[in-house]
Length: 223
Length: 246
Image 1 (cartoon, rainbow over the protein chains, first blue to last red):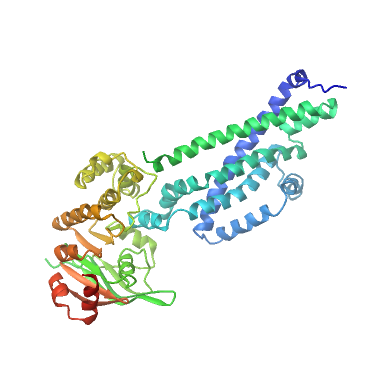
Image 2: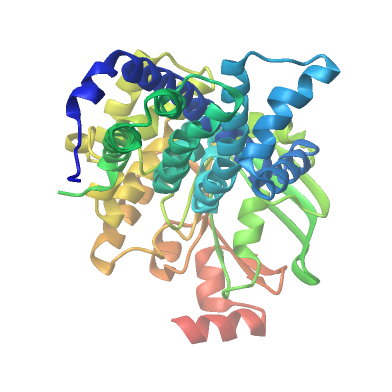
């Protein structure tokens, strides 16, 4: 019996795959942006030792990093409704991925902030700027530049981890593939197809982040 | 007209991890006066100048700016006063991600002192003054150390300060660019700017200072005109220090 790889089968399921792809892109993009925002805010609270918030984010990072994402996802989707905080399957997914990615980004961005020299802060303050001005206009742009490679890693992980959402029945790419496989048993074609789509998404995301990095690095390239 | 000193401190004490960086310092600078603070590394000069604009919070003592007592523990109080006291750092501390013009316009615009257009016009004038008009759109990394320090001076001047603090402004510079920064500081002094300068440039101190203050182990040992200090120092510690570096 020869190996038969049926491209036609993939094409026949193209619409379903594209719908799954779109859901993966949507849930990942929202989560990546929110996780980046949490990372910046949490790292700022940690580095500038904002009382209460600093301790809160330290605990948050430890909790998220030391428990499995799948358990977090189940907690949010199955656990929270019993205390009246039920979220739709989509927003449960966004919440789980955002909370997970945010924790890693707090650490990524903390490294970025720590790389900004103390002199920058003194210079900003000595010009009569407020600490928030310093944070927004100086520390964040300079810190991001350092933190971006690590934040890209985390963002790629958020994107790939969106496949966990099939476990709560969210119709993203992996869910669509599993669903097809359950009826047609064409595992090879389906998983090759979604593998290729994930790879394309990650490459696209990396490219976009490299553009951002290039932009942030521009002032530091001397001709 | 007898004016209150622009900056006056009394009984300033600051301890870092058990070491007394400042041990009861009295110091003042009058309007239009140029004071050069000299002393060995670790003598407390930088701590003193940083106490004058609140970058270091003294443990004890009082600070008066324009005769007004500062609550040295209140960041809001300091923020208001810092807009009247410019500071120039040893390592220039320009914001590396912003162009020269944006470095200069940032504070006047964000503190509400000028509109963007006014600030940009002011930046143009200041860049003329520091002789770098062609660098308006450059980033700090594209400038030499001396050029960066001149931009840093322009940035501080953009807030139209009553006084300027210079913390070893030429210590990080190549010998060939030191002069261009000292020339600019000479001009500022001639124009009547009130200046407190921590420096190791004794030739410059002798030429430009109205008064020289020698600090050792966190105390003001001796203060006087450049002539009095450099030719006829009364204290043995001052003479020892000068003998070592001159």
